[in-house]
Image 1 (spheres, rainbow, N blue to C red):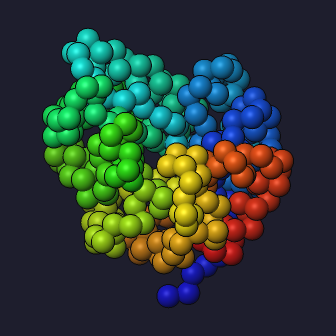
Image 2 (cartoon, helix red, strand yellow; image 1 turned 135 degrees about the horizontal axis):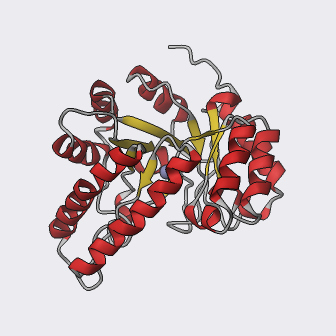
Length: 283
Ligand code: ZN
């Protein structure tokens, strides 16, 4: 299968890629100037600005918002805290709607403090998403469960594979009215022996809501902040895109590179130029 080179209008920049070093309005202008078709902002940036003004800026520049990052973790050691976490997510979902976000990215949380009960945490996550889904329907923003690499199961996410995320979506939303799906991030999923079949079933179920790219560096020196630029690591990104497109995904390709000691030290415009070049050569 010959892959069409990606056009930048189909590509989006997750603002974490630029290291959150500038106010969001400056970042948005840079992303638009560099020719990208979209962005994925973070709550702390939007909450530090005026959401209405940011939304107007995004609309004026005709950028798509490929995701709003991200949910407050669901698991907690008390019922009150779990409810508070859901309330926090409802507030963020209203901002996501204002921004016209294509999905709200759900990083679901790891084990509650002091717990070793992984299956209980997974049940809390399922129940938390279940309690939140009707709000998402009301507010009109789809929820994208993002499975994270299993190295994060302790502190960030007890959902670790595409199949696991899709199983929750099927259970909570068997008829799929478009408000619960999965965000596929190559960094988190590339190692999965079931990857191709998992992506194919996401496609069959029409649940793939986002596609995030970066690369896995060898060696990786920090489990959170040492992601690679596409092409600098070991993920077969063209083959990955081939699988998601074969599964029917026609949405945007979002670059999400957390790189404290490398890309976050370079001038933002240089990072954006490199993203553009790599998206068109290795993705
Ligand atoms: Zn991601």
